Length: 166
Image 1 (cartoon, rainbow, N blue to C red):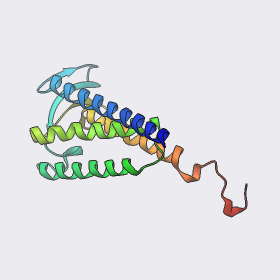
Image 2 (image 1 turned 180 degrees about the horizontal axis):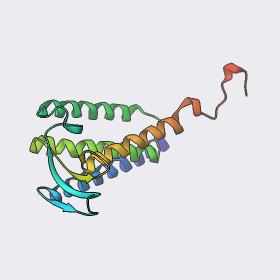
Image 3 (image 1 turned 30 degrees about the vertical axis):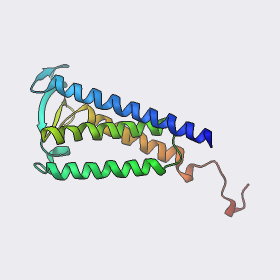
Image 4 (image 1 turned 60 degrees about the vertical axis):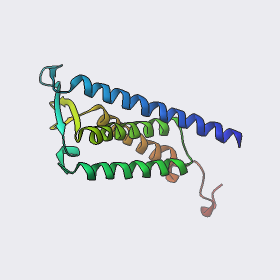
């Protein structure tokens, strides 16, 4: 029993540390690039300040209160999921820290500014994003990898007893 408490504390600390680092880097990068345009690699990569009053691709523009409510409900749902999820690993904690950090980073902007500050513009994409968006995307991809390859029953090493296999 003590051992499971240690693992819960360890995984909780890892997730919290990743979350805090994401929020810190997200907010500071937004402060440094707000109202600026800086070309880094010619037209390929530049920091270009954009105030997004909607969600991805500007959908739900002007629906800030709704986006705050939806984001808050999703975060609550993730907290509940995380509380009951038993097969935690370092990869899982890293993924959840990135997801929480990205969501909270953008939520902070929406609550205090009424918009999200985007600034990373790559010529290969048709949109501008920020560090929190990148954390969310990487976190969701890592969570999918964890669930599909390290938790899915179809990939389990245990043989199905119903088939008579040992």
